[in-house]
Amino acid sequence: MSNPNTDPRMRRTRKLIIDSFITLSNKKEFKDITVTDITNEATINRATFYYHFEDKFDLLEQALEEGLITNITFDLSDYEEVNEDMIISTFIAITNFWNSLAHRCQSGYEDTISRIIIDKLTNIFYPILLKQHSISESSALKNTAIMLSWGMYGVSVEWRTNRQQSRKAFIQPIIPYILLGVNKKQ
Amino acid sequence: MSNPNTDPRMRRTRKLIIDSFITLSNKKEFKDITVTDITNEATINRATFYYHFEDKFDLLEQALEEGLITNITFDLSDYEEVNEDMIISTFIAITNFWNSLAHRCQSGYEDTISRIIIDKLTNIFYPILLKQHSISESSALKNTAIMLSWGMYGVSVEWRTNRQQSRKAFIQPIIPYILLGVNKKQ
DNA sequence: TTGGATATGTTGCTTATCCAACACTATTAA
DNA sequence: TTAATAGTGTTGGATAAGCAACATATCCAA
Image 1: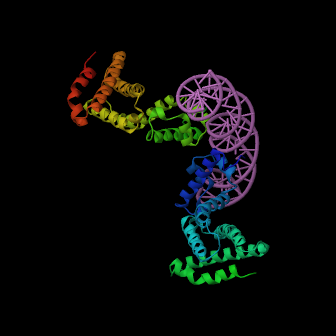
Image 2: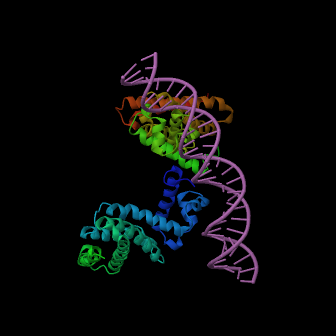
Image 3: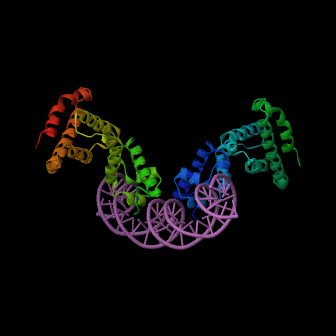
C-alpha cells in the first residue's frame, strides 16, 4: 500500500468512504449500517473498502479520529500552556465534537469513542505540559496529562447527561480543581 | 479501455475532468485553460487526462455533447412529430444551452460548437421525420433534417446577435416557413 | 430441522490511475 | 543567439481500484 496521504487515489477513496459513512450516520444507527451500504453510497467496490479499513469498527475509529483532528486539534493547537482559557476551550471542543459526529454512533460504542477522544486529548496536553515544566518531570507529566484528559472527558459526560447550566457556567467553578493538579509540583 | 459508462473509476474520473473544466471555464477563456490547469483542478494525473481525451479540444467537444444530452435531448425526446410546438422548444433549448456552457468557450471555437449542436439536432429531427412520412423518402428526409438543423441553429445565432425581441416573438413568424419544407412532399 | 437470503472477509486476476521521465514546441529574457 | 521556462503528448513500470467468485456466519421463515 502506498502512502494514503500522498496518493491521490487513496485520498479520494478514503474521503468517499468516510463522507458516505457520515451521510449514512445521519439516517441510521451505527449498528444498522453495513459495509455494503457504505460502499454502495460511496460507489466503490466492497473489496476496496477492506483495502482501507479492517471493518466498520476500524472505520468508526478513523472517522472519529479525523473528526477530532479537524475539530479539537485545530481549536487547541495554539495554546502554549494549560490555563483557564485552554480548559474552557477544551470543554467546548469536546462537547461540540460530540454533537457533530460522535453522538450518532453512540449506542453501544461509547467506550470506543471515549477512548479515542481521551487518547487525543492526552496527546495534546502532554507536550504543552512539557513546555510548561522542567523536562525532568516528564513521566509524572505524562500521568498528569492522562488524568487531565480523563477528567475533562468525564466532566463533559456529566454535563451532557444533565444540561441544566450553560457550558461556561458549568465548567467555571471546576477549573481551579483541574489546575491544581496541573500546576502543583509532583 | 473498459466501458467508460460502467466502470466506476472511469465515470468518476470523467466527471471530475468535465466538472473541473466547467469550473475553469467560469474563470478563464477556453484558449487560456491548459491541460495542466484542468488536471490540477481535478486532482488527477495529467497522463490520466490523455487516457480519457485526446486533447482539450476533444474535451470541449465531449463536454458540449454531454451538456447537449442533458439539456436539449431531454427536452425534445418526447416529440412525435416536427410541429409548431417542437420548433419553439428547439429554439428555446438551443438558446438555453448556449447560455449554460457554450458561450464561455465561444471565442475562436464557434465553428466547433455549432457543428456539434447541428449534428445533435439532425440526429433528433431525422428519426421523427421518418415516423411522420413514408419510409421511401428517407434520403430526402435526411436532407430535410440537415437543412432544418442548420436553419434552426442559424436563427438562434441571429437572435443572439440582436436580442430586440423575446424569443417567442422572434421565432413565431418564422415557423410557417420552417414547416413548409418539413411538410411539403419532396 | 432445513433452506434461502443477506452480510462478511478473502483471493486471483484485470484494468484504470499514478508517477517519473522523455522528447518536442513555443515563448521569453539575457 | 542562447538559456530558461512552461506546456504538450507519450511511454514503462508500479499500484490502487474493480470484479467475480468463494467460504463462512447469521438470521429468519417454511
